[in-house]
Length: 469
Image 1 (cartoon, rainbow, N blue to C red):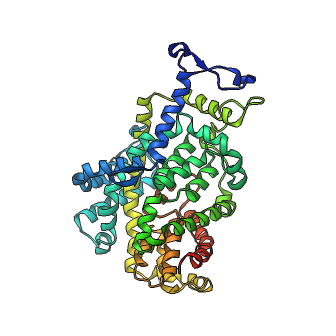
Image 2: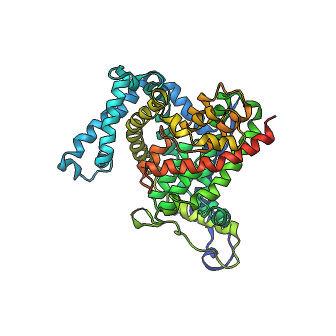
Image 3: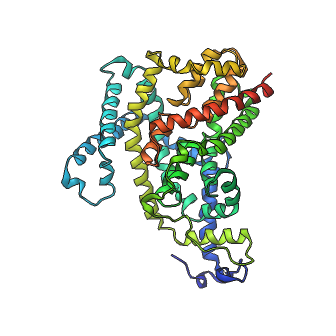
């Protein structure tokens, strides 16, 4: 709702006197765009020193909440996976409940496929928690990793990020950036300029937050299905802080800056190539519910500079922002949807994947064709490296865990790089993408991950030969 300029005194005429840009801009409208947008940039994208460490504020807030609720999180994780899954079965098989028009109740009506996944995931969670049933399910290296290491730390991230994301999306920041960088992103990557915010959010905060942001923008009509699929699977790279942790696993912290530069270069190369190939090439270029908001807002006025147009578009978007209370409810709804889906699906798919790694030779078999490719790239210990690399689709950390004992620094450099550059992994990101229904199934995701691997390997290896002595 637009605030009257009289209540704030003089107006601010920041636009050229042509067309729609001739309208004076009240300070109230301008501040409604600037203040929340700056808060969003601060929370999601600005590194600050906290307790002697360089951190992103939202990451610090999530860690603070996790520290407070840590004593209860094991049981909370089980409850989040089990209780909504049971309720999902009740609602899904009751036609009267399914017909009730309540958006929170409809979260328990996800369709037969996701109902089955939730029930199987909930059963898996209970087997791991009580350590009953086949050992390969509840082993500390399979289900134990997901229950004790992953589940307790992601719940706060879902809710905090979803509630605060409107600072990035609802007050004009994305429209502002979109106008400024649209031509660059469109020509190089074939994407709207607002995608730059998704990329920066992943890069500086967390890849999961970036994917959630992208899927919300798709559902709100700002991205087509294909654009959302490309951004989520090609640009949602893990944060700089987590990348450092990945490199630390293979004891290569001393080359972090050259390594991360190599990751960035290989990521840009993949971003330019992979979206132009199948399966991303074949994802429909349609909007959610055939409703587009991408072009909403006035066009550039005659003789109006890009910067002034960008500000005006941002202010116009801020005018349409919902009330903070409504935004919080929308955020809670989105986070609840993600949480009650991710927890059981993560347990089901993660346990299967990690069990395959530990108890079978399937990964070694799948890695066999990769060995001659690595040998062609003159990568030492190619056989061991191939096996480690192929586990990256299951979990991002598995390649570097398996690569700890590899002697060659070059090989460890490359393994860590392609693991981060893979982006998609089953225990978290892949499930969010699947739930978003943006035209990608699990085979598509594996194909994208594999294509990125094939492309990034020679880039990382060439730069590794340059930087690793």
